[in-house]
Each structure stands twice: as structure tokens, then as C-alpha cells.
Length: 252
Image (tube, one colour):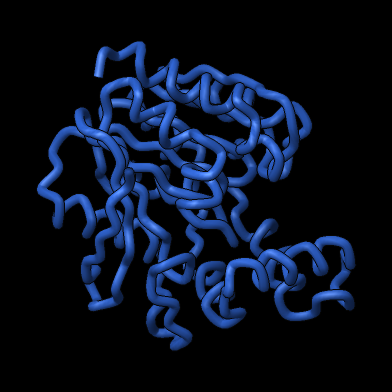
């Protein structure tokens, strides 16, 4: 049984989050155009991780799910999603925790570490080297898709993005705000992330660059692949097993 909560972030924006289980706090951050429900709870990943003796804390990122979706560009400063998570950690008085992110959530997790967060363990799902170091290229594709739909440079991407926004009840202005808040991470900053890390993605997922390349850049990381592509991998039991296994190894 999950519990629903809300808190006010650093600038007063209301962020919704869900919790599940008891034990070692584990913050789980979902992907772009998704939600905690679609990335973590529906596929059973949250339940698998909670079963290792953990308390899942899964926010809906600003603009997504049950969280506020401001359309004022001033509500989308650089690194705003990382700042929201810092505010959540402070709100919950967390000093020891693990951090899991998928896609946009993985990018947000990396930005948190660059800004000084110190989780005990880190999982970066659906993320590779170029997705962190050249955030603008991926953002440009999404911006084109959000603004132009069928008329985007890649019409299939435009249709897919519009379908996902419609399914999630997402505001285009808020999604563009997410993109403007992106900050690229340098190779030196990535190399400075020394917590034990699992970098994992689908076999057919190089949307954000190389998993293996990213793992090789970090001093204590290993790369892993599971079946599927960027969107389908979250539904694969193998992804839940990889994440739960990696976190469970630490003894919670």
C-alpha cells in the first residue's frame, strides 16, 4: 500500500510523492513525460526494491504527475529538478539514502551529485555518456516534437511525444520548461562521482549514448543491459531484478 504526500519545494511549487515500504530510504526519480506511477509502481520496480528492506520515496518531478506544472518560465531555472529533490531530502531530514533515476531522473540524480548530494548507492537507468554531457541535443529533439508534433523533423517522435503528453495530462509549456532547465555535466564532473553506481539500460537503448561508456568514466560503476529499448525496458522484470539486486547487495 503506497502513501501519497505533498510538500512545498524551495520556491513554493507543490511536489507530490509516494512512499512504499519501510527501511533504508531509497529516492526514485522517473523519466521525462512519465511519472512515479508509470516508471516505478506499475512495472513492479518499486515493489521489488521495497522487498529488499527499503522505504521507497518516489516523487513526481515538477511538471509531471501529481506535482504542480507551472507554465511561467521563471519557474524553470537551471537545475530546478535537482533543487526540488534537495528540498525533498531536507523536508524528510534524510542524511543516508540511496538514489535511483531513469532517463530524466538519472540526469537529475547526476546533477544532484555534482551539486553535492552524497547517496550511499546510485542507479542510473536509461542513461549514457552523451545524454549527460550533451544534454542539449536530446532536449532539441524533444522541443521540436513538443512544438511541432506531426510536423517535427522526426514525425514519429513528434507523434509519440504528443501521445505521451496527452496520456499524462502534461502541459506543453511545462515540458518545455523542463528542457530549458537542463544543465550539461562535464567528463570531469562525471569522473568525480565516486559512489558505487549501476548504469543500466535496454539492449536497444542508446538514446542517451553509451551505458558502457558512462560506466567506464566513473571510478566505481558497472554497466548492465536488460531486454528492450528506452521506453519498454522499464516493463522488463530484468530491470527490476538488476536494480533490486544491486541495492540489495549493500545489505540495506
